[in-house]
Length: 272
Image (tube, rainbow, N blue to C red; front, top):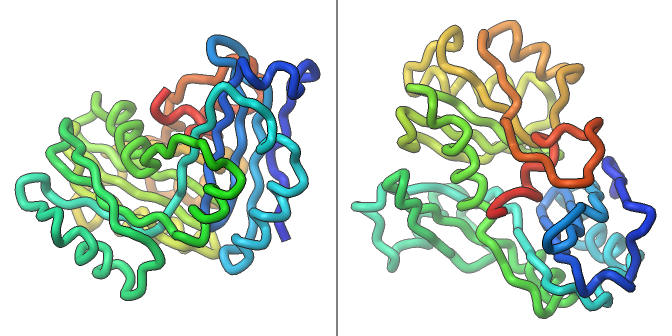
């Protein structure tokens, strides 16, 4: 069953101002986030839900059927699809005709078309496949939406906030997945997505990245974004092993209460 975890709505928001606003939906295998912002002003709405991956299609349809917003005349609509099927390849070695082969090393059966985009500042290419079961739902509810490349936006955000460090590890939390990246002097060394069930899973995957690239937990900072707060068990476990932990310094959305830290809704600030 889906769980509503963030529910902010400006008391003046309604269909009468939709044509002055941009609606963004981040649709994923484990959760949905909706935001509405005036084109040149305040955020009107921010809502996030979590659900089990095996219930994603039904949960998405239930949530979107309950809201009238898909029918409102928004100035524009943006869709980002979180996919755990994503990887990177050195730009100089990437062969577009073999894009699907890179993804098959992650999962044998991929329910989606391989897509890719160059990460010029990192000398890498991002490769991913959006799940067609989710894109079908997105196309149905938001037929005129512009699709943005979630993986590209996330990696660019990671680099932006870690590039002042010789080495850094970044981790983005979703309801049941983490996305981990490692950087050295702004160059992307590693990126992968992991399914987790308990805090010890997260700690294991994170320290594995430190170990694989011979990074010292006492020196290399860990940048955190997504659905994690300092009182969480995984944060306390991180503190036992990693000396320098920082929440990603994402820019806040205008109008969102200060009680909601910007790193929690990084998804909604990608490409802004």
